[in-house]
Image 1 (cartoon, rainbow, N blue to C red):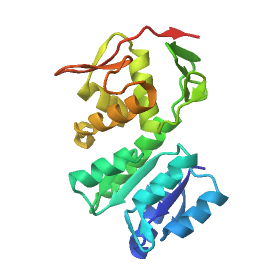
Image 2 (cartoon, rainbow, N blue to C red):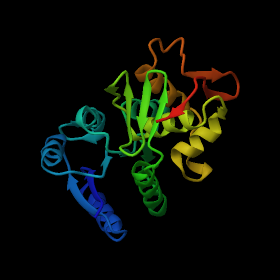
Image 3 (tube, one colour):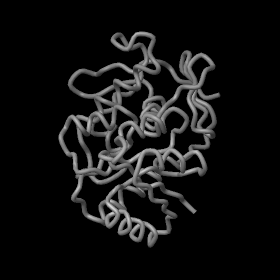
Image 4 (cartoon, one colour):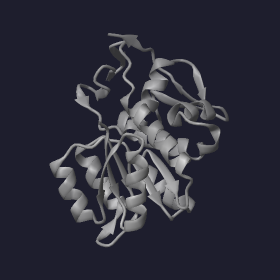
Length: 230
């Protein structure tokens, strides 16, 4: 059974979400603090984290950073903070989606399913190699010069998209549709810049002068190196 850790200090909301997600077949643990969440994460394996930002002993951003040290498990921020800078910060820290309160329950369930689906998808065509970069698609891991690259699920999905379509320009909208894998209402065009910059910082020797993932000005991005299958 898919296991979710819901970090939310509003007990009534947390209880309602546990019931809602439980009816969808998910097992949900609830935590109201950063400290309790860290304890649970150390004890159990989770398939998804849903994090509130404002918590009694810290915030969801800090917890996201702690999770990303050892886990690439998908993370959804669920919070009343809906300013653009809050959304961008959540994505930059490794979040895979950002849902603002108040929200519609069907939309929440849809986006939970979408994030889990993106993360669990495994392509069985083995290995992609481009220059010093290698992707093992069976294990969903990427390597730079033999060392594993610490990618979030969304970063991995984006890298896989471009390497599977090398020498082809992928528009920003097409990239986001693949990344989010949901209806257009959920797409935020400004998000792609965050993901591209973060990905370049991890795979390029000089992110300001990328050799792999280049900008097609006014259109989108292109993987500008040959890719072979191992």
